[in-house]
Image 1 (cartoon, one colour):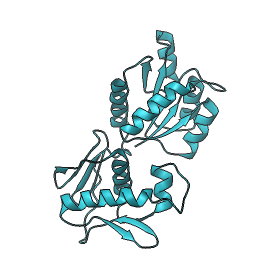
Image 2 (cartoon, one colour):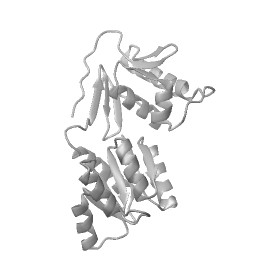
Image 3 (cartoon, one colour):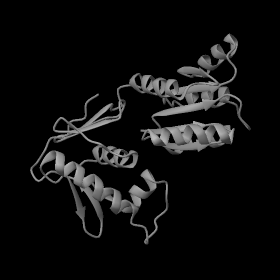
Length: 232
């Protein structure tokens, strides 16, 4: 699940970003309204966490422009302004929910999950391929009914493979999507994490699910044909 965090206070942004990444989310951070609009037009996000008081363009303006451009991504406004008129203005601008600072991180996570549930028919809450199932809201992955003990990065990798089953995914793509890194020919970070995930999947499934395509990348594929069945 990918989140855009729009917050100009570096301390707050760092705290929220770190907490979300520890929960297994992929997070991009924008520090002003113009950067937020640019990122929202380039990438597809599951949720936008939007501060109101921002340089260049405030949160109300950002939300209004996104909705005016037809963007339906759920927006959660975060601000120290909790006056009724500000809440009404934010909702009228297109926000789906409003969270006043300071807030408990657990409440932020709950609000995110609620927004994603209401995020529309295009949102896949549960991903499935063969015996593997991943619940993106509860952050639970199972294989054949057995719950997997995955690190945040392993969870993100499995999520990406389940979104692209039977496709060959290049190392460079995984570095960009999961680690936000450019290609480094000396780095084996992808291979190490893939190796751990591969063993956990094979142990639970009783069959290999992640295969290496030598010289190209990796693919999620069963030894026997399997139906791909995303569930909303």
